Length: 189
Image (cartoon, rainbow, N blue to C red; front, side, top):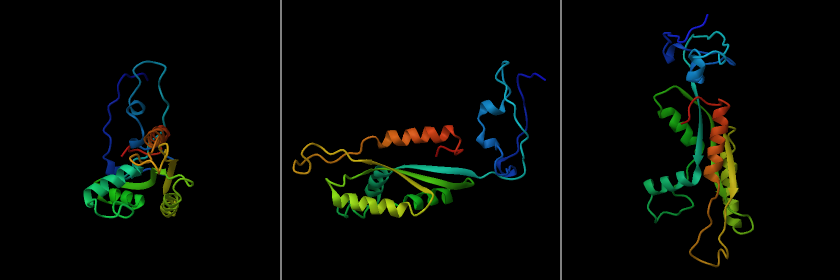
């Protein structure tokens, strides 16, 4: 039965529930729940189970250096020691965001992207980073992506330049798009 448009009264989010493995209305794109406008792109669907509420799965993506610097500038002065002031637990941050959200969400995963000091150029920093990452990864919901810092020529003897993170934002963006295309989450928050 060909039709160019379909109009339906959908239930509110609180009236929708799904069973494991079923599609949810919130996981479908506009294209998938509207009728095709021309022949050849029709999708065959199934029945939807509309029996309660749906919980959004949240995957939190964190550029750790930006979060650290933001926390440090908001809550501490430059007089506080940098090795403690501004440090954030990614899992605790994710849990706080879920608890404070007005929506029904479940924290599925926290993905942390950060630079890692080189073990030969900065063994103390490398050790601290390794311990910090190990503490985060005690939770199976935390996944880390680490990239070795880029050091300026002559570091540390030449003053003025600091090691830099390179490619962290690109790695985060690529993973975000990859996971979104798999429909691993229904929210880009």
